[in-house]
Image 1 (cartoon, rainbow, N blue to C red):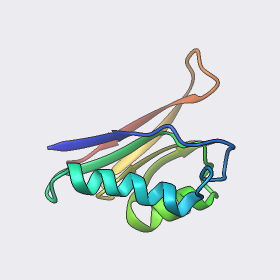
Image 2: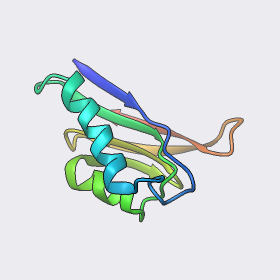
Image 3: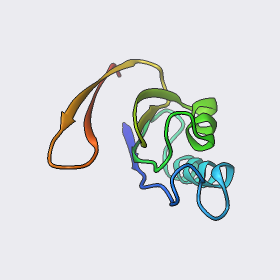
Image 4: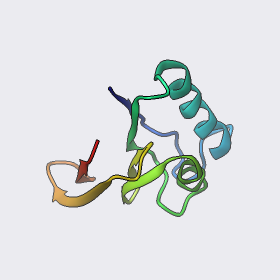
Length: 103
């Protein structure tokens, strides 16, 4: 089973929102921990509103494997088996990201 969590992060960018990055990451992981089964392949992706050097992505990186990052977008997985590619603009101000995962 692949458990997918699509997250749109809080603003302003790189703040983690009103409660900060640690609380944001805690809440993301709490949902995943209560809804996914331990044996599920867990995938978190979305416009995190936090760049790769932010406290949010750093905290996520302590608990999950970063598969892709571009600007404020990211893809994290429970296992490090993947590769990624930026596909460029596709009608959005964000680049499309492609991730190939070995499950």
